[in-house]
Length: 328
Image (cartoon, rainbow, N blue to C red; front, side, top):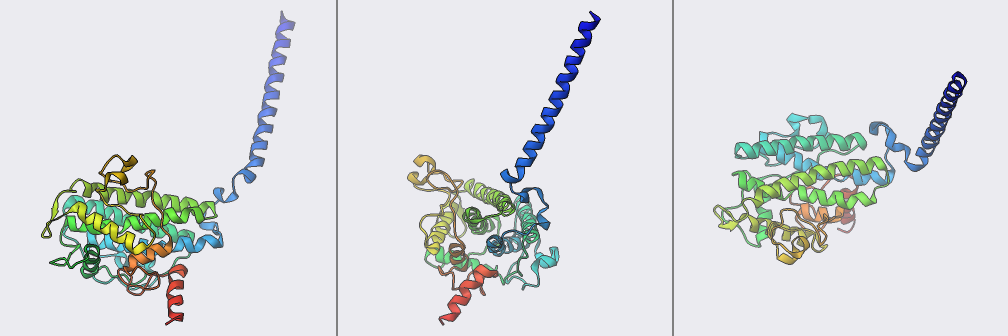
């Protein structure tokens, strides 16, 4: 019995030894394959990794929109912007024109302040990955938004629209901004080469989409409410803004308001449109050229104006301004 027991014990030991060797072999094989299966960039600190040159401009371009969002939300909630919150992020760029604290109820102010601080984080995230550029000259004055709304309605609103007057006006003005940025991230993602670049854009897109969803959700709750003193519903304001962005972008339907014809709703079965998407409810994409046409308010990526009276910054935006200058 003792001999049988000894043989059994020895067999178990041999089996365990073999298993250990097999596990070690398999583990080494898996790790030896990882560099070929997954690029090394996934395992390094982003701050020490140089993104592919082809990605740099695509990662820097969104700073134009991130500066705009950060300043609009910071001023709206606090009455001051990056010059006080984090001056280093401006890289010496000029202070925004006409931005001021909005007359917001406590709940809306809380939401907008969260957005504001998120945008500060976005600026930091991008500048940890690429060098970036100084804050462009931004025009966030009430008159800038009033011109946009007049353009959207194809007639002057009386009195001129003031985004800072109250919470509903401010939310309608906010509807103008994050959605443009998120379509840009959707458009940029398939053009990116490096995994770090793709991870950054995916993360930025997630939060920008969330901001847009919150804004649309808050407005959708009040979709049939009339905006004083225009006697125009909240939904109609969003529809007009979306139609304007489609016209300026010159790229077909990539924007939808809160109430749409049923054939444009999800699965062609509903008028409510709390989130915008194509026929498969997938987010629309935009190119940098389309975005510039929209935020300049000119329909032309070479003609600055709107929120960017001197044009955007960075190689992509400046290249169109330089091209225009060569032919004038």
